[in-house]
Length: 265
Image 1 (tube, rainbow, N blue to C red):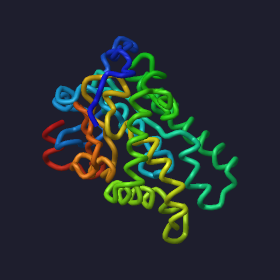
Image 2 (image 1 turned 120 degrees about the vertical axis):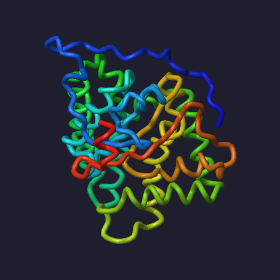
Image 3 (image 1 turned 90 degrees about the vertical axis):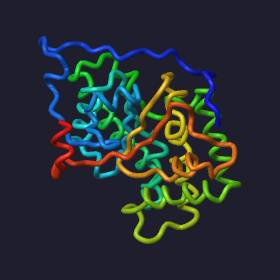
């Protein structure tokens, strides 16, 4: 998959709005998150990647209000271009529907959860001096009409039907997403239904720069993403990770900082 500039919006650098005369770095306490061997708030990380994308998962207990707040603060302390990504309500509700909740109730509940998490991210970034947070905290449905988003999603869906490594990667991710929602091993029908969640996030997992309109981007998530791994490993014909795009696993050392973490701070 070769990145193009088709549909790419002009990149707008982040503008910080001072609060009470204090620089953002004066207000931010490092949250204890590590990426690529560096603290998330490290300027060495921002110099390397330019833009950071924080992937959030509404029903994952890791992404508590406290964690989302700390992540946004750490990212805004060093990166001049911060984006936060949340799934849409229809995809998020799929897990609850598989667990037996009526679809309408599942979607309404998902909307509330996403709305609350989105507000936490927007409020935190604003407190860190980031302006225009609405254009930086995204729900994936925002990109449904984006040409590059549609192209990548279509290729991923096609690969899911024809390529065993892609199909296995998607099933691994759907199985993990359904853990805690269904009592037993997910059925093939449940995994098939929840694959739509993975399809919806795939374009940002594989080529955030093309979708967001930036030159480079570091996508950060709290665990490995098999879909990214099989594409980055060249195991899916016709799909490549976009130029300038990197996905890295976040480690949480808030409670147990290592000597390296303390030194880097």
